[in-house]
Image (cartoon, rainbow, N blue to C red; front, side):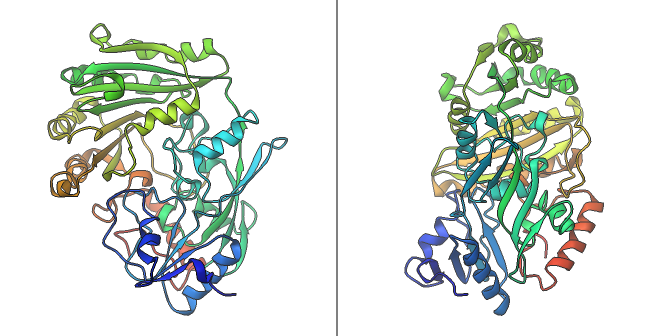
Length: 445
C-alpha cells in the first residue's frame, strides 16, 4: 500500500511549507519541521502512512483540525499525518447515532444535526474538528448538562501503531476505547471515525448577557463564586475579562457574563438563567439582558469575535476549587497585565460535576480559568507570548490541574488526568504502541 504521492511532502519539496502551514490555525507557526507530511483522504492512506512510519522508525503526529493552540502535532522529524479530509458524516436519526470522520468541523456537524432536530455538544469555535476535540475531552455547547463530549463517544474506528484497522468499544479493544476518551494529543492510534450518540435538539436556545466595569471585579467574581454550585446545569455561566468588547460597544476594560442556555421551552430557559440577575452590583451593569432567544449560528458568530482568524495565540489554563478570596489576587494581576483586546480571561462556573464514565478523562473542578493572549503583529511576540503562562504559573498553587483543550504542556507541564489514570494510560500505550510510534504529550517523553 503506497503513500498518496500527490499529497505527500518531504521537507524541501515544493508544497511542503504550504502543507505544514495549513495544519496550524494559530498564526504563530512553530519552528518545528516534520520530515514528512501526508494528507490522507481515506483509511487506506492512513494505513499506508502508519506502516511507512513504522518501517522507517518515524514518530507520528496527527492533525484533524489544527486548532491546537500549541500545535502539538507539529514536531521536529517524524511524520505529520493530516486527517482533516476524513470528514464524512452518516446520521441515523432513528437510533440517535452518527458516524463522523475526525476532520468534520463541529459547527458543520451541528448544522447537519439541527436540520434533523438533533444536537451534539460540539466545540464553541467555528472550524474546530471533532478529532482532537473528542480525544481531549470536549467542552462544548450544553456540556454542563450533557457532559464532556467524549462521554457521547460510543466507539471508534482506528488504525493502530502496526498499521492494522481496528474497532474499539466497551467490549472490543476496551483499553484503547478507554484511552481515546481523554488522552488528547498523546493518543497512540489514528482515529478514522467516531461513533457518536447524538441528542434531541433542545426546544429553546437562549442567552443571558450582563456587562460590568472592570473596577467591580471583586464584587462580580465573589458573587460568581458564591453561586457556582447553584447555576443550573443547562446554563454555561462564562465571565470574560478584556480591555474592550467592540461587538457590545464597550471601549473600556470590562467583565462580560455571557451565558448560553438550552431548555425544553423559552419559559424554562428564562427561569434557568434568572439566578444570573442576582449580582449585588447589577444596578451598575453596562449591559443587562436577563434573557433573549438565540440561534446556534448567532452564538458561533459571537464566539469568533474573541478568536479572530489570522491572529497569534498563546494560552494556558487551570481547574480550581479555590475561594474567591484566594483567586482575586491572581485575577487582579491578570487584569493589570491584560494585553489589548481580543486577549481575554475566561472564567467558567463548571462544577461540581456528576460522576463520570470510566475513561481517561478524569480532571475537572468547580471553576475553570483560561487565558488567551491574542495579537496580530509578530513583533509583539516578546511582549505578549508569555502573558498566559506567567499568570497561570503564579496561580499554580491554587490549581488542581488543567484541561487539554487549552494546554501549554510544552512550556508548563501540569496534570490533566489523575495519577491513577495516567498510570493506566502508560500501560495502554505500552500494550498498543510498544515501539513508541506515536508522539506522546509535549513536555513528556
